[in-house]
Length: 353
Image (cartoon, rainbow, N blue to C red; front, side, top):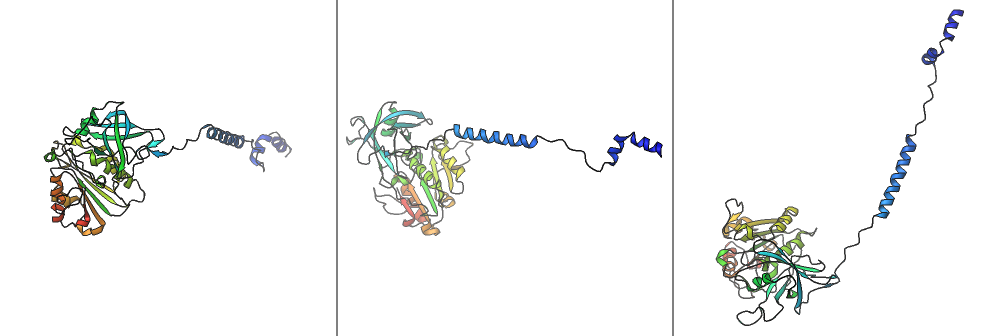
C-alpha cells in the first residue's frame, strides 16, 4: 500500500486530469469589448457622415408663367437639338423663376417676331398652334418638338431659325376640360397618310388640342398635346381610364415621340395600348400597314355597347375626318357619319377635333 500511495503521489498531473471534480478556469475574452467598441465607432461614423452630407435642397417651384394668354411675347431660341431626319427640339429661354405652367391639353400660338417676316396669302401673319413637350413646371425653358413640312410655312420658318433668334408666343389657349376617370375607355384615332399630303395644317378650335393627329403631314400640331395628356393621366395614381392610341404615319422614321410613348407603355402597360400603322412599312415592320379602316377600329377600339363609358376622339384632315366620323363644319362638329356611325357609335360617344 505504501508503494501504491507513493506512486499515486508522484503522478499528480494524470490524477488531476482524470478525476478533478471542477472545470479548469477559462481565459477571459475581449470579444464583447471589441464588438461594443466597433458599434460605437460605427455609430460615430454614421453620425459624422449624416452631419457632413448636406440635405438636398427642395426643388424650386416656378413663381409665375412665362406665357401671356392675351398677348404675344418674344422668346429667344436657346438651343436646337436634332431629333430625326426632319424634326428637332427647339429650346426657348425664359426667366429662371418662370415656366410655361401650361394646363393639361392646352396649346400656344406661334408667329414670327417680325410681323413682316412670315405672311399668308391674305397678307396677315401666319399663326400656328403648338404644344410644348417640356413639363408644365420646367423652369427657365419651354421646349417644342417641331417637324418640318415642305408645304408648311410655319414649320419651315421655325426650322430656319438660328440659336439667338426669337419667335413670338401667346398662350395657353384651348384647354379641353379633361376630367380624370370620366370614361373607362378612351380611343384616340388620328392621322391619315400620304393621300392627305396636300393638307399640311388644320384650323384649331378651342378644344382641338385634346386629340392627336399624328400623321406625317399633320404631325405635331396634335401629337404633343396627346403626349401631354397621356403623361398627365397615366402618371396619376388614381387613373383608371384605359387609353388606346392608333398612331398612323408614312414610315417608321416618322413616328415622333416613339421612345417616350414606349416608355409610357412600359410603365403603364395595363392602361395604354399603342397601335402603329404605316403607309410604307419596311420588310421587317411588325406593326399594322395601310389606312385606318372599319376592321382596324373594330379590332382595337372599345365597342359602342359601352355607351357613356367609352369616348372616341377623331382628328385629321378633311378626307380622313369625313371617312371616319363625318365631315366637320368649321369649328362646329358637323353631321355625324362615317365608319364610326356605321359601326353603331353615337354622336355622344364621338368628338371631332
